[in-house]
Length: 112
View (cartoon, rainbow, N blue to C red):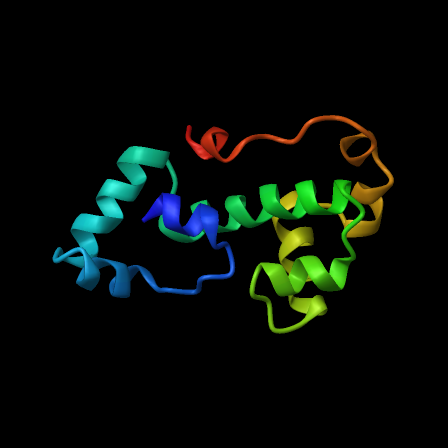
């Protein structure tokens, strides 16, 4: 499941839908995700989106394209998530050293 979402970050399949696909209860899957990543499913997906976004933005992909790649309905929703998650507006992060050649974490670093 986590590999599938890493490959297709715009996938909005809910935890309950994943649980049904995997023939287990929502609670069991939620515990497995926390055990594997140290994060709830929602937090893990948000961190995945941040990693993908930072990589894409570092490659000069437009904010509009990144928002679409991640499945956001609007650029505003994407920017709001970014601000809430990082505590900084997208514009301030874009001008920081984070996007000026520093490497971004790999998806495997989304674990504890």
